[in-house]
Image (tube, rainbow, N blue to C red; front, side, top):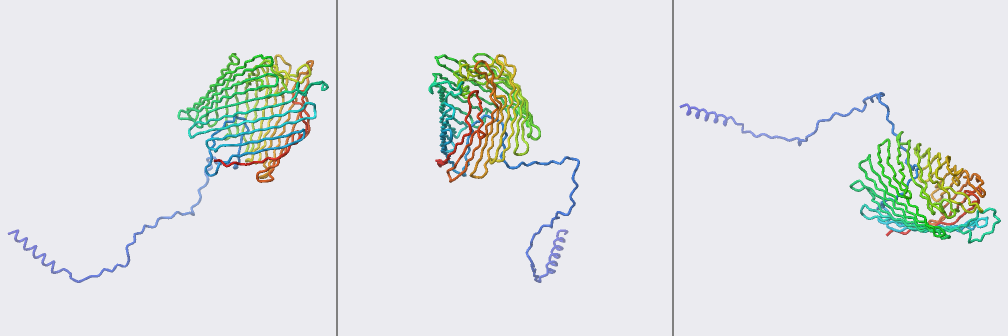
Length: 543
């Protein structure tokens, strides 16, 4: 009964709702499409007051230097580097021929050629000739030199380099006293010939093991016109192991072997071997190189110091330097004749050993000015000195001082502005004392001042000047008398300018003040002389 009652009530409710449904039609009008928008964001108010400066902390200023090329005047070994050619331009080989003539019957010729693609090979070939004849009898000389050098680099990390050349000089002994002595021209002739070659290999970048190497092997053959001949072989093999940015280990092995035969076939061997292990420790404000140099000078063992330190202050613009080092000056017939071309054949060869303790500073002021100053205390063993012979003084005898000390003051200053202007000057003062067998340091200059100026006045106009001044060294002459030539000064200037796209004119003035000084006793130099000529430059497009 209950179920039946519920069914009846449900049916009645459904019928009532259906009867009440609105059957009329309604219309919906859409006035616009729906457009979603973002709520307007709050804007920054730029009218806010600037906060006051915090005076509790120091203000930091930044000094941006002028964009100029800047070079510190510090001698360093020249090392050829791999040339990276910009692919935006084509490599061109530059070549030139320079010809001229001047007073004192001075012909001059020079040429340079270059080959290679600039990426895997560079080869330079050069040659030079000059001769002069002065007003003093037999005051004449000539010199001819030619050679080639090249760098060869593959796609790997190895670079080869080498050079070979020949040098021939011819002069006459004209500094005899009295000058009324009669000599034949052939008996006064002094001719030197040199044939040289070098080969080296190095890795262009540090390898995966932190190793860099740069061994070289060089050979020199030196002869004169008096039956003397000398062969010199030098092997130098430096290796560097880099552990990190702060520490590296350097070691070098050098073998310098000389075989010399004098007139009369007297044989002299002069061999020098040494090893240079050292540790380099670098930090942003200082660097220290500490090591030793075991050496064998003709089988005589000596242990030399090798310690240098640099301390950087004032944003690396001022550097303190100091050290205690030992090194050799290898004396050969070739090196002695290059220093003094009027020497007689040496009867012995001893190497000069030098120990130097030094302290100084170097740095820069502004973006153009650089300076370097150093005070050194040196100790020489077997220093090479030069005295006139006791016959007529036209040749110099090489003698060796077993022990000598020197106090040296050296200073340098330079000003450089891009590649348009540069001026470099230097002064070296040597005070020699403590000689054991000689009273003076014969032939060594006690004071020397130098200066060099290079100035590109205009695009096609270049000017250069050089100045040399020194105090005369002491000499011992015939009869044991001591003499000292007067102080010398020499000023040179030159100019070069373009007259055509590939043709330049050049002028060189030497010894402008006509100071006929004597660097070597009894040998007066040439007076004022001028040389002028043309330079023709041409280029060969690289293939």
